[in-house]
Amino acid sequence: MAPPGPRSLVQKRWFWDDVMTLPKWRTAMATVLGLITAPLGLHVDTAKAAPACIGPASETWINITVDRVRNSKGLITATLYTNEPKRFLVKNGSLYVASTPATVGQTRFCLFVPHPGTYAIAIYHDEDSSGTINRGGLFGIPSEAVGFSNNPTIFLGPPSLRSTLVTIEHPNQSITINVKKF
Image (cartoon, rainbow, N blue to C red; front, top):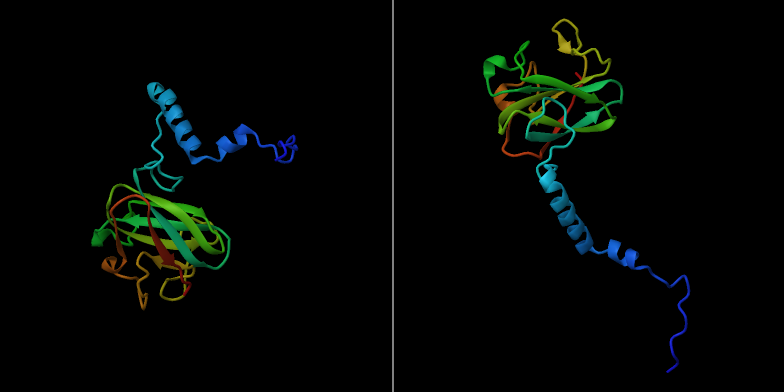
């Protein structure tokens, strides 16, 4: 058998190329970085770190997909309510209101909630970015697309609180809310 010839530059692989592809390398580097930063108090637990959500920051959030968004004008506005019927869909009855830019088709975002519990979420597409839901006609029906958690049937009036309640037991749960223009 002939002795191996010199390796061409095309065949030559660097040690660093092999190391960077090994999953063990990533684990080892994470351990080393953890050991270096731990005494400095720079620890970040990525398993529990919240994403860039809207609303007042907390350790609990819900991922929301708003489906059937007609255009990218304005904002998708989310209103979070507690499980209190007397506060549902009334002025100053919500925990808070938060908005994110609209994206045609689907708009995805996450919403902080104060703690695990049962909540209702109302969504509307604020196309003119006015900060309020526009109403029209004789009966004050919303002229902008609206939707609610659990996607209840909306017929001759707003849905009941009970039909919109969703239980958020832990961070990172996901729901889809369909918006509809009347």
